[in-house]
Figure 1 (cartoon, one colour):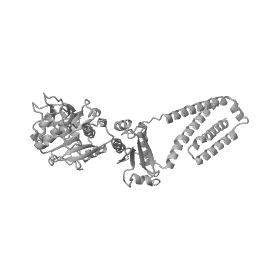
Figure 2 (tube, helix red, strand yellow):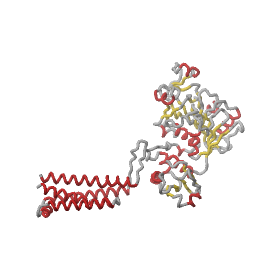
Figure 3 (spheres, one colour):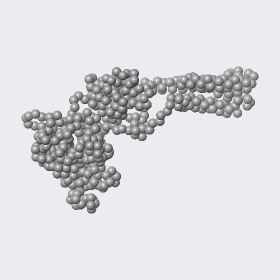
Figure 4 (cartoon, helix red, strand yellow):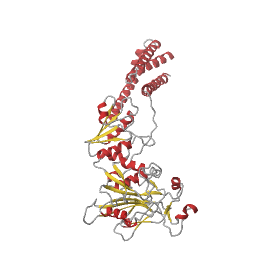
Length: 514
């Protein structure tokens, strides 16, 4: 009896090994195919040697044949279901990004940009077959193309296409992603989502909008890479297609005609009367101003703010919450809540803002313009008026001081009337009670980066750029050789399932023979 059971088990295992060689052939593993055929033939031979006279005939004519038929039928049906599922996966592919930082998911800004492409864009990726970055770049471009039929891409081997390398000025260590749209050309500074999306904006936008930073009043150098500088913010603006330039109203008290917006960032000294007159005239003709003013700073811009219904409070916002002290190390770094009531901050409503030191703002009563708060402190914050003793004696609320939520950033618009040349149909103002939140030291905190760029985009009338932008995200990668990948596929898709199937059938035969 034991010989009969062993005969059946060997025969079944041999048959499974032989039939499964069809799967092994898909991986091109000739050695494994021959090995499985030899083992399968040995199993069948052993089965015949151990079987009783007439046992084979009885096996195929008895109940075993009946059950074997239905087992084969079930296997065939399973194969059909798997085939249909694979066909559907090829025709309608779906992916799920399970990484911690969502490194394989395009940001809302990128998706929005791709779906609104005004014209055809072609991306040339100069990566050869032996370049280790090629698979990662190709995967990124594949995800971009899936979001817009207007974007196509092509991998170019630099060694096989020297004429394209020369035409597009591809150099060692330089950008290797070239975007073409009509007669326009742009290069992605980095082969990641942030670099590619910024290049996409540059190549599809017609014309350049110019952003001016005022100078001469102790403002930080916009291109300074130190902590107080704003080089990162300027890089972000240029990445979105803006041209950034300094503006000295001391040399010529007139705002240039090509100014899409004028930014006044953290001045320490007051503006002179001719400068204030130049900014006022600019606003009266439909100009757009961004005023980012520090606490205690006397800038002389109060009349200009009053024309938009905004007043600067002479205080410093104190936020006693533990989260605020975590970021700033002191209670004078308030964590602000962005408002969902304005396009600048609508996408940031669930994201906090960190202002290192800030003063509160107020809306002036009786003015024809009503400013809109877009960033407010927490309800436990207050406006400390005794700033001189704030750092020496500590923060303490005194009766009569304003309590939260306090407006720390506001926007206002007013229509442009009268005759003469107009820059736009309305004057726009963005004012914040802090001028350092977009410095190199604080720009990457919470939603500061998007708040600043959204504010400038609104001033420049680029409402399509009011969004949350992509960040550079890092994922953990495992690099395997071709032989390792092939072995893993064979073990997981072929050897392991076949072994489980064979052992399961063998166990069934042993139990059935008892």
